[in-house]
Image (cartoon, rainbow over all chains, first blue to last red; front, side, top):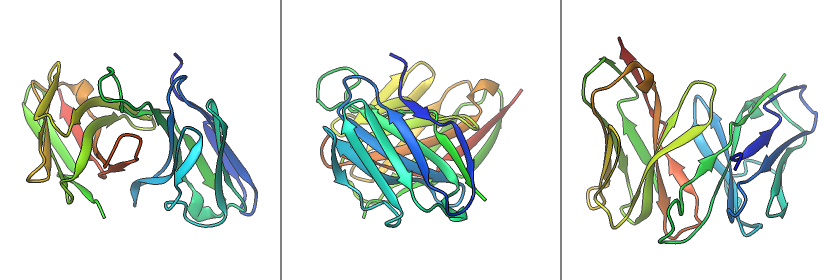
Length: 118
Length: 113
């Protein structure tokens, strides 16, 4: 498996523009997580999905942020309009549940999308 | 609300030294705990996962322990090497499988040759 795939790897945009980050989880994983990492705040959970259904979006900072998971192999995180304080690295991660399978509940991260909002 | 703390924030050691990284969490009702490694500009790589019923896990030169009652975990690195230089993050999963991980801010390790 190619692992968790995120795109774009780098995005530079101007304040007010719409940004869409994409994620393809590992095939067979039923949980998908979006995290944001900054030097000041570390890794923060934004939202996560189980079986394509959003479970907890309490970490989404504002209404400007939205996330979707239309199917088991694709998710998007959208920021509209973007602001300079949204500059961060956004990580997508996936895992599969279970209690006995090897690798169950191990969170696997993508390489991240580095967003810079000018 | 679960909070995860890692001390120290940074650590520098000479090659060959054995070292311990610390992680503490405020709510002992965790489902599991996972240690990750992050290289500069890269994503996170899972190192070890300890289920709440386990006391420790080992992988090569790494050994992670878990003491739920005291809200602590340690990551022991034996015979450190320059290639071990990275940021190490601890994360706890609360409640049941499928819930999110709560991360500490990490310990940045530098091993000099």
